[in-house]
Image 1 (cartoon, protein in one colour):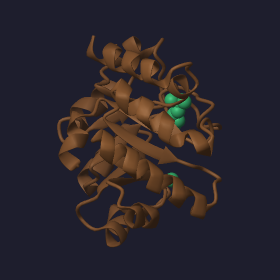
Image 2 (cartoon, protein in one colour):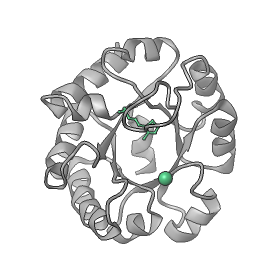
Image 3 (cartoon, protein in one colour):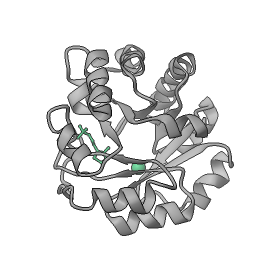
Image 4 (spheres, protein in one colour):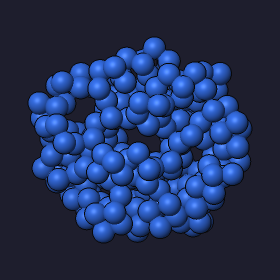
Amino acid sequence: MKSKLKCATFYGIVDLGYVKPERVAEVARGLIEGGAGVVQLRAKGVAKEEVEELAKELQEVCREGGVPFIVNDYPEIALRVGADGVHIGQDDGSLAGVREVVGDEMIVGRSTHSPAQAEEAMLEGFDYIGFGPLFPTPTKQGRPGIGMQDVARVQSLVGGKIPVFCIGGVRRDNLSEVVAAGAKRVVVVSDVLLADSVCEASSEVVRKLNE
Ligand code: TZP
Ligand code: MG
């Protein structure tokens, strides 16, 4: 699955802030059909037992769809449900700590908010990074946007070694600017999840990434 991640340009997130629990499978199928090359479950403020149930469901959907499935925040849950990966933030400890739980095969990604953090994560050995939030976003409230001025630098510093997914306020209507700034891969959450058709919005993201 680590090799599949390298092909992914659009990283889809099933975020429980936007998706009702009973719709997670349908939404994940829409993301995958639309061209997401990797799918994450992000369930902030949801009881761990429920996160695990949803993760089991999504692992199956992603296996059927042939894309890696990543659990945000919970290495133990990722391990128990047989997920392909886990994603952690700056405050969630070291890669070594996560590897003790999940082993060497699993994909482990890190959120980064500056070129220095991006380089550090790459040198530490993370399999991919998220870089952002580029713009302020309702999905991650209380964080300023870091802007697009460092995107090209991070892409050339890190992007040749591991995938760099630009994130935060990226939408179909500003995607061409993000690409012009040097982004090769993106995460789009609210713009896709709130669209009438998750599948069509996802394919539009993929099409714009390839333009
Ligand atoms: N990490 C940095 S920004 C962000 C996360 C999880 C949210 C991105 O969501 P959106 O709706 O695409 O701005
Ligand atoms: Mg976290």
